[in-house]
Image (cartoon, rainbow, N blue to C red; front, side):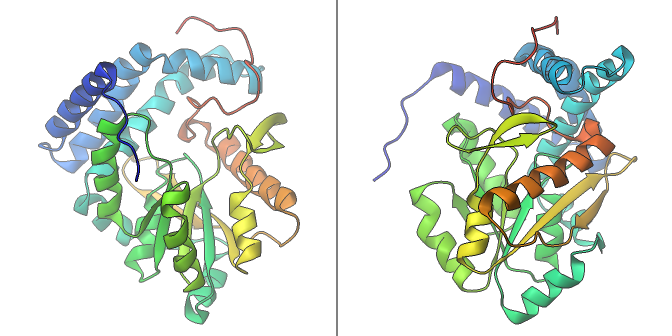
Amino acid sequence: MTETPPFKLRHWLQDRAIRALIGGLLLLPYRWRVPLCGWAVSRIVAPLAGYRRRIRDNLAMILPDLPPDQVARLVRQVPDNVGRTVIEIYSGAEFIERAASLPLTGDGVEALAAAHAAGRPVILVTAHFGNYDASRAALIARGYRVGALYMPMTNRYFNAHYERAIARIGRPLFPRGRAGLADMVRHLRGGGMLGLLVDQRMRHGAELTFFGQTALTALSAAELALKYDALLVPTYGIRQPDGLSFQVVVEAPIQAGTPEAMTQALNDSLEALVRRHPEQWFWIHRRWKGRGAPRNAG
């Protein structure tokens, strides 16, 4: 039986503030609430939470030659995309309706359809880029049986309603760890598709590279693909210039090999995309090993 985490006043207060913000925004029309949430996270939440400083630190380490005006732009735009993503996920039916109409593009669309028709399992790998649930919603709308592996939030109060929000987009959901392992395996063995994110630093991950720097990366996506003879397919929801719509990209399946080589290919896929759209990746993550560059003012 899982023990309930102890009460933490800081987490409870954070959750009250988040609930108030989300609840207020959901009263507004979709086309207003999404950019407004982006503005609120970029201009209010980001400086208070230290996101601006973390973005600057990561950029200084990874893209040291980036001009100051470009750094300043990303410091604003990255948390704006984070805010838009959060309120989109909480918008439930309105977000799903928009995502359902999105066409699938990319070299992996036919392979994905063939796997679905044949009942072959698929590991769909995405990242904290654009809106990571846009592709899941678009695929579910087409009848694809897409489950999602997710990492429960540290803040249990926030996690409770976040789980409900992502569940409205589609089920089944599998919490990372023993709790969701058996159900996840049954889903894959039954020919289902499993979506997961691989762009966070994992303490026991393999020492691979991302933007030329060591990035501890979980090998689980590749290991699952090899174990269950599943396709390993990168897929992304790329935010479009209007700030509200997406291009859903399904890339060609990763060639089978060692888990390390396959996972490095996933890192390379994401890196190429981030270089084209740096404002859409969550640079607020502590993705790389070590402390990186000295901190700048936020």
